[in-house]
Length: 610
Picture 1 (cartoon, rainbow, N blue to C red):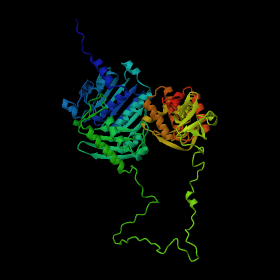
Picture 2 (picture 1 turned 180 degrees about the horizontal axis):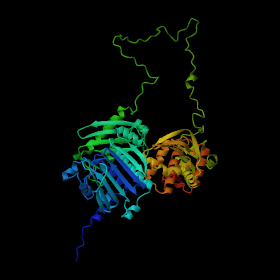
Picture 3 (picture 1 turned 90 degrees about the vertical axis):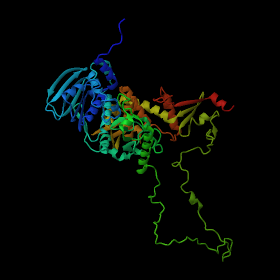
Picture 4 (picture 1 turned 60 degrees about the vertical axis):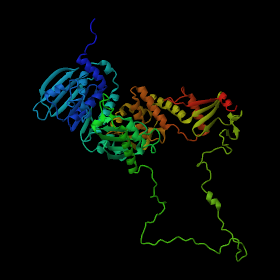
């Protein structure tokens, strides 16, 4: 019997390893940018074409490589960072495992041009599918130029699962953003399809954050800076009033490396608990410096998950640092003594003598003693009705309620809902300004007024988008919305549908847009916040199919424009909502699956009185 165990060829082994390291074009961008940083570059340029499918190129002015190093760099587990196992726990660089370039070369066509400053000529290497096709001496500048072409050209099954260009470009921008935010001393530029889309000059950390997230972001930042024996924590947290409902800007970096850490995220958000409503998350850019021996970055192929030896103490330090920063910058509510009606507190003057206050009384006063005219003393008359001025109940001050409304909420207009004639007197009843109650054949129906309106508006907006018949209302003073690069990349994909419902956006350049028109139905809704919500929802849901994107847009608009809880409805408004709701083919649930209608049947009601 022949043996069945055999070693895989290097080309196949590299393709398997590439499946762990290289998931999409953004993975290649991350690895090449990190290599450029490890090479000591002060200027890095990223160039892509067709969202990285056709070309990903990284140009840096780092120290470059010799001809031998350039060739060895594409071998599996070839690295200059590790010589022994102990080195894994004393890492000061981004890459160290020696898998990235070998994995990239296994699934793409790679060209490397590199030269050291001490060399007169450089080296050119061309590799396709792990096979070296050319190596020769060339003339080039100091540094390295990595060009990756036709990703997954030899693995068509993997290439087939790539998303749309907009989605892949957004992932590239996310990786690019994470790199530029942690290295403000390096100059970065991004060229997309021969157009320079982004340029970040070297500067301070605050300048880099503002240049990435927008000029208006500067006023939102609160700096943090603390150093202990376990960790040094620096960076910025966002003011509570600028917190976001969806996709907050939350970044953790440790020793210059981006990481995800839910446990530390809880430490930050817990400091905001008394300052933010439910469902709202704060922004933060937090940089930790710890002893490399106290962390393990080798637990995840992409190195975005890191294990900390002193996790609990750092959690406590981080939480205390954020709370101190919030208090120091007076974002925690305090009593304001500077108002015009505040008590005038005198300044202490030690030269003045303190005089005990006295109470002056008339010892001769007797309310029962007759006056010289023979009449007893009478108190001066006072118009007590003046005390009640301004408390009268008017139609403008209070919602109109039946005068004989009984506190049990079971009677309206002095007529029980259980009486046979109740339906003729009142069709619907609003309970707690939240639910609409109506009598049906099988019992008592509860309708959530906000969710019902969401369902109605969703159907209307979706129809407008599909038929492109939205009504736009021009704004007298256009609002300006500033987007991050990843958010701005969604605008071309959303523009047609935004215009279909009534938005009119003008491109001001540098990821800023003027809101010249809004849908006529959204009323006083904050248009800037609404567009942010639409974009971020589309990013989070990963809507690549046009129909899915249109449905997500319609739902975002409906949630923003629907009547809120607590709003008093007239009888006519309740009738209109109920009629429109049941005209919808799907009236029991909102588009995102929340219950709209609940029935309390006759049997359940009867059991309550047994």
